[in-house]
View 1 (cartoon, one colour):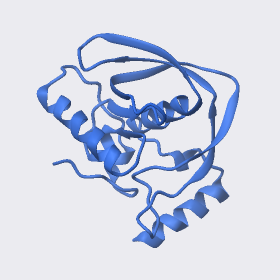
View 2 (cartoon, helix red, strand yellow):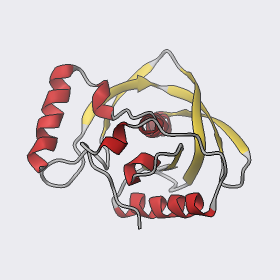
View 3 (tube, rainbow, N blue to C red):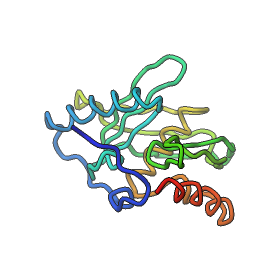
Length: 166
């Protein structure tokens, strides 16, 4: 059974290794991650958030509920236009055990390539909330948390809320 890793756990700061073989264990982990994401009302979850340092993630389109299971996802292009949106993270919780939120600026549109659970290659251009989710989750694969993208004063405000939890 996988367990959610929380802000402060060093696994969240590791750069994940590529997946060379799609093993039954990885597929099982991804299925379990989808369930965890849904149980916690999330829209994405990356492998290091459950203690696995491999490059895979799951994410869900909020309106349709369509789930994407991405192995070795790679953002190949980012639009110069940026959008500020509120972000939270299932690994960055406040004293109430709920995600802490902050406004983050990210590219509005991204192109992403990945391998599916079927071993086939996929590519998509994503905008709106889907661009936001895939950027947030691929950042996790490189040891980056959304709080790292905040200006220092805002980051300190968010981290103060996180420290209150401990």
